[in-house]
Image 1 (tube, one colour):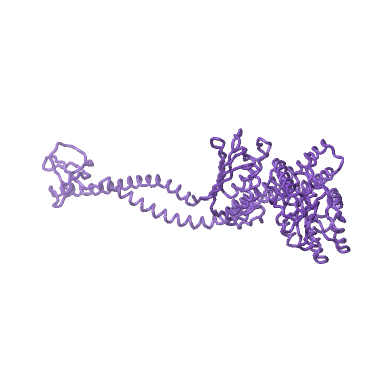
Image 2: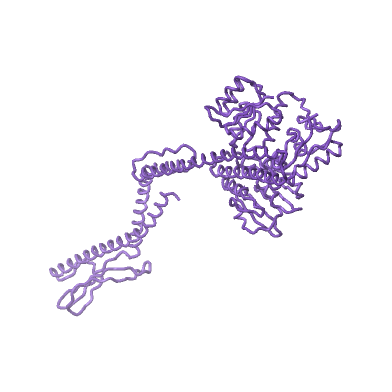
Length: 410
Length: 228
């Protein structure tokens, strides 16, 4: 919900009690005035009748007295409310009465003057209508004003927000729209400082990764070259040969781990992000071609059910994603096992036989989680990272009879 | 064959030199940009193996540019510790013939240098013969006494790799990496290489080929025998 809409909504909710209280006040005031006026009118009429009677000992021709009854003296004049049945619409209608005493030929009479009062329901309806009208008018004018003012005031804020949303690490720092509002200025300054810091950190990390990688690979080259040279010594005994072989192999493993970690951090840093529409079927078939020897040598049954599937992804990442999953399914399989691959209905699913797991499938996706042969789990960590980057749903379950099922939904 | 090796890591440079000299290449070395730049102006080389990151005022890419103007015939292999696609593309666009990422095997480098030399010098006639086995890297054909032997892709790659590195112990890891690159687990490679070599030797023996491939216990394999 937008800030403005939220403000409107909250203001409207607050207006409801204001409306009710306002209506109550109006009702009371109007009722007070109506009584005031009616009483005044009835009092004038009483005085007119009294004056006329004093002068002529008779009642004026057109008087408002509805009732004249003989009574016992003395009594003061007083007002009272009463309900009179209106025969026309068969409804009791409120009236105001003024009763006063009149002495006529030594007999005491009580004269009743009566005037119609507007009903309470009519009054309430009226006041509510007036209040609602006023409110509606207020709200319209208020919203227009606030909308106009807010747009001007918050312009810098929304501009800043848009800049920030579009910003990616490694790009030029955004220049925020200038503003005269102190709070926004502070916000922009804080943001710029924050961005500058994370940008610096990002560059430093990137540089460190690259430099570390460069040094690693260079010196690994030296170790490897020297090991190879030693391997070619003719007087090599079996023991030494085994040592050399281990060293040689470790350099290879180390350099692959290093490359995988560098790749992981590059994906995390969004350095691989040129998504284009990629047909994963082509990618998959190329990968299966590369791995078919591994599959054959391990006596695995491979079944593939694929159809052309186009997904927006960086082609390099698509390659890494699928080949990591295929490699994983081959590596963590059982002898005479199977691999079933499905690529259709906008998802990639790979099911393979495998060993039972001691760890949770979530743990396997962390880097360096150990498999049973001491394999480090960078492969799956990379898969997870690629899925996160592309907002793919990654799901890994182990079904009964150790069927490992990994699904990537695009 | 004269090769110029340009690499700022002196230990690696020495190892490269020793390895390629053992395969009867004449090697000269340069440890920085300036000395390499001088050498390519004065001498002619058949192949230049060049690192991209160099001290001394210029990069390996600059050297490629210079070499392409003074001696465009020279074959160029770029070696880099940065596995950067951008560097690779730039190097190849400038006219480099091959690109290798560190760390690489010396046997792999030798094979690539030889393949490059063949492409540059013989322009098609590339037959290599060891014992009674003829191998043509261009057409990917293997013949024993004129009779063709059918090999799988991996078997051919293995034999070709051995032929490019005669009399040299090649580690099983290096063989695996040559054939499958990153697509094979280090842990798995031993078994795979073992069964591939077994099949290869079986096929060659069945066709009456000389047994050239010798297992070196605990390390790997070696192609023995002189080229004939």
